Length: 87
Image 1 (tube, one colour):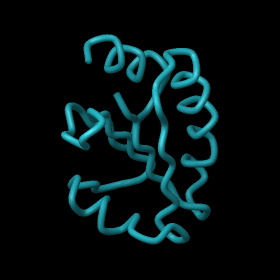
Image 2: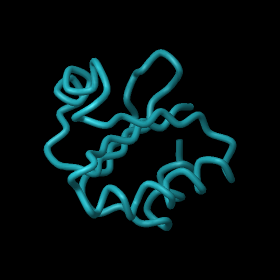
Image 3: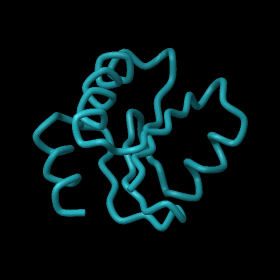
C-alpha cells in the first residue's frame, strides 16, 4: 500500500496536514510519497492523472499505483485511519 500526499508551500492547510499524514503513515507502516506541486517534477502530471481538484490531497494506492481511495481538501486523522484500515 502507498499513500501519495499532494501539497504546495503556499498552502497553509498543506503545511498543517503534512505532519498528521506523515505520522499516521509511519504508525501504519505505509509507504508515503510526498509531492509539492510547485517543486517536484512530474507532480502536476500525477495530480492530473488522479483527478486532484484541491490541495492538500491524499490518494491511497497499491504498489502498482492502482488508486483505491482519495481524500481531497478535508483531511483528518480519523478519516485517514479509516481509509488505511479498509484498504
